[in-house]
Length: 365
Image (tube, rainbow, N blue to C red; front, top):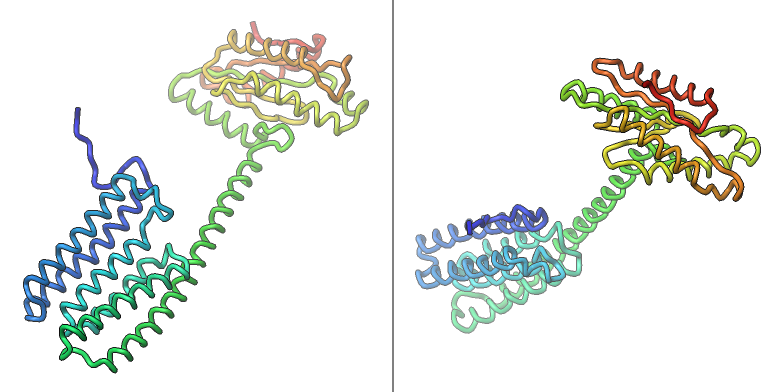
């Protein structure tokens, strides 16, 4: 069995996106590793603390990658693990502040970077939780430094600095929460817009009464089928249909009943069509079907089936004693023939079916 493994999954786009964001965060960790090395080089951080710093970063990222790659993150309320990653980063900063307390002013800026990481995912409340966790870890750092390295800190200055950081983190949390909220609203609006555009596109190409393609889009599809026929030599046939005495139905029963007859007729046709065929409302009570990969003889069998199904279908709005019939003209598309000519031939045979007594199929022999 071949071993097939990829660092980023290729079969799940959402998981792939989460992992790409994870690697972006990992890149920031790597930058922090380089900072820690320079701190060691400058004599600010001892070797044991340096190794501990690297081990913590490595352990955090290995655990996170396993959670993402195994799909365990999908069982959590936030599959992106944004909140967890931000809290883990706070612990890394806490470690750094304790062991490199000489430059803790610089390390405090990392809290802002951590909050920015959640700007696309977290709510204001979650931002405030992360800020509270950051303040707690920093408070623990100050407490431990006061015990083990009292010469390194001034309690009053540290209290002032802690309060100042609290103001900054709360401010950033409120701003980040607002930005995140705006982003979510924009995302909802975008989805609504996409849905509306889909509806508009469907309305633009479909007849709203029958659900079949409108004439304009139908002609585009026929032209595409014609181009395919030119390229590959494939054949197709056209079925031109007209509901018999439809004007009488409208005059006798009213236009609303006529519309319902069209809907029922369309449902009958739709139940017969193959997936490769397509039908459009050509005009009024006329419909045109394109039968792909179908010669004239097969098209004739199909048309006879349509005629029989329509004749034997029940149209409830017309009453139990009424029936609807359809006349059909067929034409097989000829090589290099203009598509308008093929449609014209199908229309001529439809006219012949009407003149021949209706409820019949006509085509060339």
